[in-house]
Length: 410
Ligand code: SAM
Image (cartoon, rainbow, N blue to C red):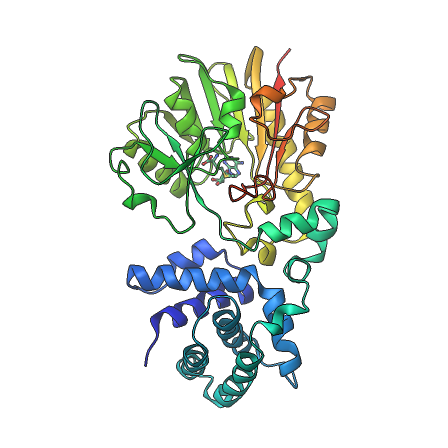
């Protein structure tokens, strides 16, 4: 029996783990597929990526020698079904064996069958002695996160909920929870386009932590605000909805087109510029600049479980150098007294507090510490930065990891 979900999940795993492509790009490159199969394939591949270390450790004692990579992927998919997704044992084993055949791995079908049957017999006990959070986190991230590592890694085991930012004056779709910061939260797997109000532009998808950057910038109606690195436009939409005159700068033309589509749905209008924010210059100085800089994205692992498999410690120096260039460019766009918020969806101190300290030392900016009353109960660091992690608000389902700092042009 052909199984389009497992075939597609296999293609996704191969793309991420063997060809180092992003999971979202790999999803777009899938052959045409029924929407439900596609969503199921995404979920299955994401479950494997999220728990890869654990699944490999559970399979290890059952393998006499290392199988070829494609066979390992088939085993991982089968093991995820058995141990994580409550797939009935006979179905998990049979679909994995069938997958081995459709992927031209027929000589390994017997091995897949034998290994997964033994894993099914062990059941959840196969996971009992394993330190999942540690196994599922690359060593460089575990050590960089220090004392927080275990709590962050625990949070990564769960699918992220759907967070919405509401357009001003709009009622939230039913079934949501209002978070202390004002975002609305819906259960994982909720499809935004199926919620009432989507077509009318009543809301946009934005993690609760991602929504904090524009809140800290506090744009006022009529202010001239520049949004650097703007696509797909969640923060642009917040700035425009506040009545600011927004210039959104984004380097990638395809992503800028997505930003325009998103804002058109929301009936918001902004000026868009396709340019490198590090070299572009505005026609006039701005009242405020929001810089949401490109980063390692380690704060978004719950939503993007491919990140730990694609990013390396050695990627950081190029990213931090680019963050410094963008901060210098952003500072140069402000009028005297203008405000700058620097945001990264990263948990790495090199991309957060260290960049803010470098900006203060080198760019002649004044620090404008985040005040506790602006943080809705989220922790402000002793230096006055706002730093969120997926381990915060465990009772509500966590949030993305972000670092946020605010400066004033003297
Ligand atoms: N601010 C966006 C939002 O809230 O929806 C998310 C921004 S995402 C973290 C980073 C974006 O920066 C990507 O769309 C990327 O293409 C863009 N980018 C990266 N380097 C850039 C540069 N030098 N100039 C302009 N855009 C850049």
